[in-house]
Amino acid sequence: MQVKVYTPRIVEIASEYLPALAKRAADSLGDRAGDVSATRGHLVRQAVQDGLLREFDELVGEDGTVDLVCDPGMEIPLELDNRTLTLTELLEALHYKRNWSDMKSQRYDAA
Image 1 (spheres, helix red, strand yellow):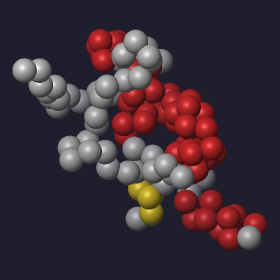
Image 2: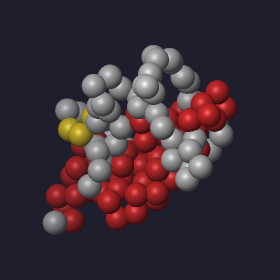
Image 3: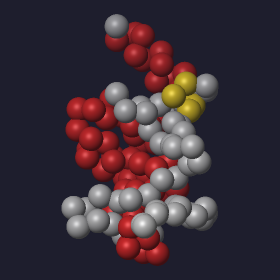
Image 4: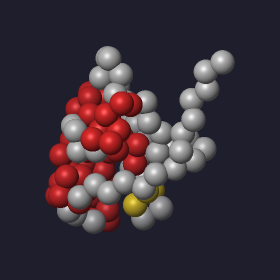
């Protein structure tokens, strides 16, 4: 019998890498990035794929996917001001370092 076991570990990803990781994670999802809730897992799996977390290299499959889950009970979406962010919104927030209320008001002005 084979059983996968996930053990808790804490990893550190430098803040300056987060925008690029979020961009590549969003790019990998294509059009769905605007609909998918962003999670820590998206960022960590992308960091593993990019070789930033070499201790997890064995979790990269032959097809390039990373077999890794970051939060207990599945992955918890990232939130800002009590609102779940999509990967696209996370990328905007990280890239432009704008606060959520500025992003929100721009969306309503455009509508």
